[in-house]
Length: 155
Image (cartoon, rainbow, N blue to C red; front, side, top):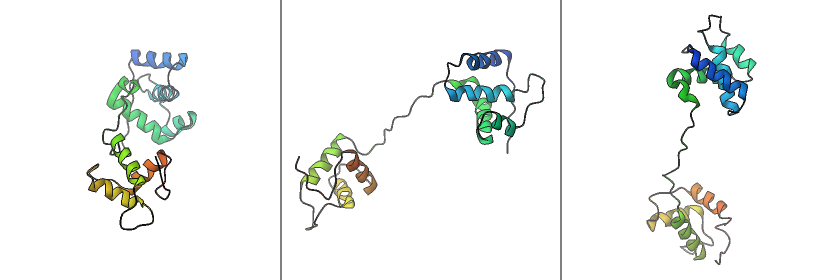
């Protein structure tokens, strides 16, 4: 296991202490501040073991290790807001939803008594609405729209 050593300069230490004292940061960030302040080896004191730090702040040693690694890699950027990722790979858009509703209003193929999830998925691929889609994705979509393939839908 790699051991990450933390050496805070005066400015970083003061910033972390201010954030802890003010309490106006995310609880997770305040916990990170505590972990880093207690892991700091630049103050000339013997630093506590990771298990002691984890116990003191009611977290796991893995979290302590992750915070120390993140600080070594990113520095104070660890505390900057991360940009949220949007899913650009979503297969089911409004057009696909409309196709599913239209399919449910039609009779199922091959004299089947009702639409099955796999039938709906296969039909969307046949119609080239999507390249590929799983029956679980169809199931989630129907649940989201409060629909069921076994009921007759007249919309």
